Amino acid sequence: MRGLLMSVSVNRVWRQLPDETRVAACKLIWAESTGASKQVLIASLAKAKKLREVFVRKSPVDRLVNWTATTMTLPDPIVEEMLKKHLLHEHRAVIIRFLELLQIPHAEGMIEESFDYTTLTNDRVQEAARSLLASADRMGAELYLKYLVLQGGPWEGIEEILPTGE
Image: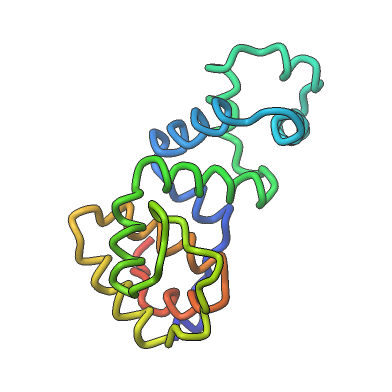
């Protein structure tokens, strides 16, 4: 067990990412957000930066991306969504490899809804996680495994094997 070590949190994971990774994730969320999700993003960024919403709404996308990437206090659901989009866009092969190691049915890295998570044992999940950490995309593997820990359930045991030197 990790004991006294800090547990994984979505904002801690976000803060630990290299600047270029946060910028890439922010580009994706600003490019793909529409309607209500975009309004929530604008309102959250305005609040975090202590700006008026109308100013944020009228700002160029490059400025929004940079502000978002440097904001370390966004609401957890927004940060989690940015991490998810980044993982699916940049590290889909890592996700697919992990799911295949566990023989989890999926469509391009998205787990099929009918999958029964109770079939996963902590030992199998940790073994697959160790194998993933030994892969060529070490950064993508660590980020994906941290993301899974945030989801809880059968993934919680992964935290015990994550590298602690961060």
